[in-house]
Image (cartoon, rainbow, N blue to C red):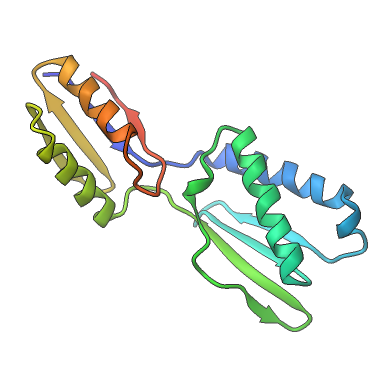
Length: 162
């Protein structure tokens, strides 16, 4: 029986490359001259730590980072910037978390959308992925096109098509 998985994974190497290129661009920009700005990636926890002097520079750094992610073919929606920045002495710091894996609520929404589509497929939630199976590949392709048309505030990948 044909099946595929719905996942939301971030490639750490591509994210690291995007951060390195953004760091290089920031050091060459005129408005960041003589500023103490740092961008670091915690590869284990998928957290980007940004330290800078004011919120204008912080917003510029986030914009540069998102544009570099797009050029590396990473979806910038994977960054969770809901946490506010906090002051630390003369600097401000912000943590951006890269969403890796589907959240439970998003899994439920996707599963409910598949069920309401009236397609002859079965879907089951397995940790942070959803496995969809059907008798016909055409039904699976219809599910993929249905999910691509909706916005779940998180990038989706369709993997392991068998």
